[in-house]
Length: 88
Image (cartoon, rainbow, N blue to C red; front, top):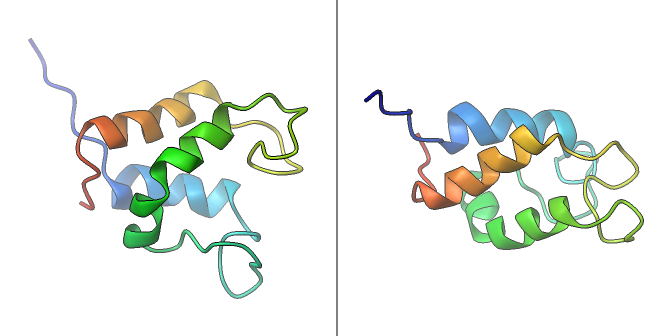
């Protein structure tokens, strides 16, 4: 049985954050909690997943003012947590 590679921050999560959470959560233009580091992203994982899954009509849903994250990208965050929040 093939084993799926573990989801990591560097390979899987950081690119999603870079493309979907900018500029609000990335310096220098961001004005919210920055998710450009492994430590910060790891510490906010539960809140990130919760907000990704909120209905788009909820003002706390993320990414704000953009299309909802596709389910496969939300699943990457969920799997990252399940895999132990690996950096690389």
